[in-house]
Image (cartoon, rainbow, N blue to C red; front, side):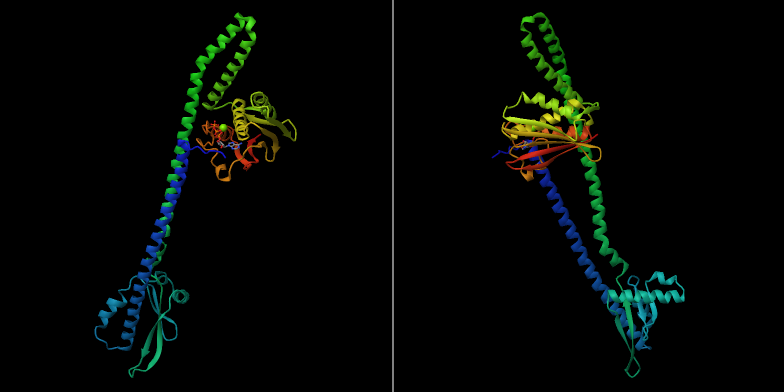
Length: 403
Ligand SMILES: Nc1ncnc2c1ncn2[C@@H]1O[C@H](COP(=O)(O)OP(=O)(O)OP(=O)(O)O)[C@@H](O)[C@H]1O
Ligand SMILES: [Mg+2]
């Protein structure tokens, strides 16, 4: 059982991801609400347009059948011509278009083309809504034919139907732009903090270190009998120098050099081998051969390997195997796979291990892998990910670099 310790920054991360879901949920509710509400409006207006056309039909019927009806002009102007929105086509008893309104395209067409256009519109209208019948009767009230009124939704209604989608798309695009800008500035800020901290650390270590180096030299010369002690001291000073160099590299644009990846990895292993438990067996293999050149910054890359190995040793509680394979793979890439036989990472944690502040250790900072990822991705343009992990079996991390 590993105890999962929540660092302050870890809860910040989990809060942020639940915040994301809350925002997404609210946006979905608002979108659905807006669509449903507009749909209601569309239905109501559609119903109203139907009533208007019904009235229109009855009026036409009345005007046609009662040729001497009073107030003809009034009715014509107030009802027939007042319809400025709903496109209609009236056909005579033979189904031929006789009159139309609110079809501006037809106004610009000549006879034959206009006829064809109107007939096409009729079939469109028929598909959208049932036509309304106007019954024709003679003076003796005998039905002698029917006219049809074809109509479709007004332009306003069509616009209203698509309005929420257009509106929501614009909001979504706007939101995406804000999110990208926000994310970008947050990353830029994080970069400044990392670089600033590293630079300051290197700077602060620098002064006492130079003095230490000088003192060790002085003691070595002055007390030749105790040379062994000073050689040990020298090792620690060298180590401090390396740490300072790492920080100074993080704090500036690191110099990249062509290095032999296999040798770089071997060096780190030889350094670590004597410092970790004897019960951990470490192997390094190279494929297809040991001649694998790669552009990298050695002090920083050594730090990467060191962080991963230290995690592996922790995961195995000091007992097991660590196998490293350096491989030249397709597309001019070099892969470094580091496998351990440790306790593994649960599936739901795999994504989190690279986040700063995520740790499951009592004395961990949760910075090792965050730094590792930064070095590999930002400084070397490569990739690092958990290639495979199985709880209680082990984990394989893969680093990909361009040659
Ligand atoms: N090889 C591994 N096997 C199992 N779990 C791992 C392995 N490597 C990393 N982890 C998990 O990922 C977490 C984060 O690792 P990371 O190196 O970033 O921080 P840490 O080791 O906890 O602390 P430190 O800042 O001291 O490195 C670890 O706490 C551990 O739970
Ligand atoms: Mg670590």
